Image (cartoon, rainbow, N blue to C red):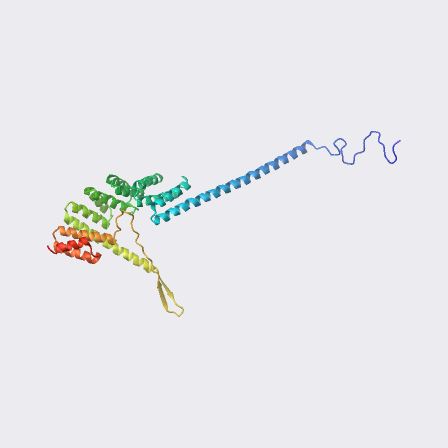
Length: 357
């Protein structure tokens, strides 16, 4: 007989609450479809988690790369700026070092930046009178931009300063074959004068005259061209032609000087501002722009119209006149020379001599 208050079951099992399965511990059995859905959901969640991780890692990598690139760009531009500053200050060796570091930081991908820095480096090497190094730098530039006349003209100038007249003329003529004669090209005139001057120094007067005569035919008129031609003609004892060249050169240079002064006045005039005062009176303030004549790099001929060139042409013209035995005219020219350019030992000596003739 069972205990009081308890119900006995013949099977020995307690009845299960409603909704529970007697075999699966009170839980309903999970179907295969449900299992597959759960597994699929777990896989999807895992894939999404991995995708988010990969995305975040990618963002970090891109950010790190951009930061490194920005730092590299900042560094290379910093060294470029330092190089330019040293170049302007006359520290040419220091400038070259800064430009080299900028190129190292830049690498081979930034061609325009590298080309810009190489041009500055070539200037520094030229001014340092390391002409062989400058020639090599222009070779690198020509690899970037083949058949660029400007680089060839610069190389010609370097060869001229090394006294290598053959290569100076060769490089100059190669550049000439590529240019349109009616368009100015940087370095063209400097290369002509450097190559011609080197020929004069080497007493290769025929080479110099051929260069200058061809340049005049192409419309390249410059006082120094006539000056160098006159020196060649003096060496050949063709004093009349020399006098004519020096005289023509002086006229060309004087005209260039007058044009430069006129341009300076025009620019200065543009800086004039007119302001009205409170009481109605017109007040004028003028901020004069200082036009600084930049000195040419070492070895470069004086600018056309410069006082230095005019002085040399004036003196050489008087000497040629003296060789023509036109002593009174030569005396007057030397006296005018002293009045215009100041006392000069050589000119005073010539004046004393001519007064005895």
